[in-house]
Amino acid sequence: MIELKSEYEIEKIRESGRMTAQVLKKLREMVKPGVATIELDETARKMTKGFGAKPAFLNYNGFPFAVCISMNSEVVHGFPSKKRILKEGDIVSLDFGVEYKGFFSDSAITVGAGKVAPEVKKLMDITEQSLYKGIDQAKAGGRLGDISAAVQKYAESFGFSVVRDYVGHGVGRRLHEDPQVPNYGKKGSGLILEPGLVIAIEPMINSGNCEVEVLENDWTVVTSDGSPSAHFEHTVAITKDGPQILTNL
Image (cartoon, rainbow, N blue to C red):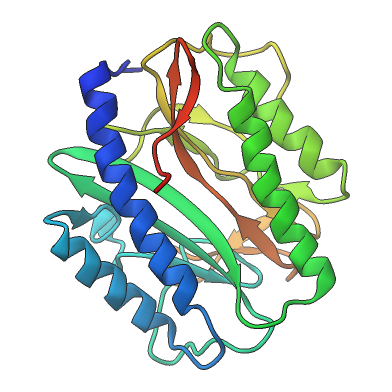
């Protein structure tokens, strides 16, 4: 069931979203060769506790960390570890959310450790830009498929592929709500977008094919061909005045 949010609820999600954004800003600054990925998770937990909030992912359906840290060919749901040390040229997707006073936010960025290969930097840039192409279509009176089609058209125009097995989602009172928000689809199709709808738009884009598989930990998703993958995400509210990003600083 789709739950439209009141202006009050949107403001509460925005409060949560600002915390999420602050944590991701700090983690971005920490991504450097030689850093253990567990340090990023520990920092996120400490900052969130300081806000008087909770990491949204920690223990969610059994997920054992505060941040999904996915490296290189990992698409989503990667595990941080003391043994996973960032190297020059690695790319790291940082997917994080906050629960604050019963309201959830969700956001993701992909960051390079040191100097990244030009073709991988292009993948990151196009993935981020595809997110904003999707957000531009998050307009009241439009269709959910407008968002999906905009992401897909932009990413595929550069020869990249869109992951189909994992999608964006509604967010607010719970971390994952209806509707699902695919990153591929047909313009003019799907749900009519109404003011009060809050969704997480999150392109997951591969440099190779779109196929993925899950590792033995039953969480971490990787590209089936070993190609790099990038992931960007914002929590967005549909309003009568246009889309509002709730996970900005």
